[in-house]
Length: 201
Image (tube, rainbow, N blue to C red; front, side, top):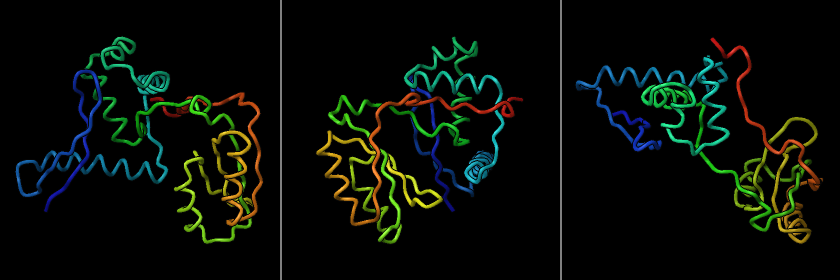
């Protein structure tokens, strides 16, 4: 029986991912058991289990959210740790599902999508899975959340002016009752997420 696991490794100060294969009936039994234990932790995390982190982990998360392009060498200097120690922490945070991905934040306005909207959809006229499949094809929509209460979905969209807003609303109307709000300003456009005090050892 074969098992396939995603693993991460560090090369030239950058994080990469590769696939490692382990076979149960061979000398990799110890490594296989180690990987199985990691998967159990990840599974518990997805079910809402709380993950303990020390102060160094929290500082590492803070730095990465400020600059995801920082190298392992620079991280080691900021954290006063060796490069292998930093790499180990990075891999552990990824394995536990705390770090989901490394990505870039883009300015919608610089791409010609200067109008941001929140759209509430209620009294859905289609089955949820039908509506959700449609939403996935709409490139103007940058977020979609199914919520509780009288509203079924809350959508965030980035469009090109009033014409773009009208066209998007027209495409959504067949699916339910639409309530659209244009974002005038964002006092808190984005906030870094850090664990609360109970995470610290």
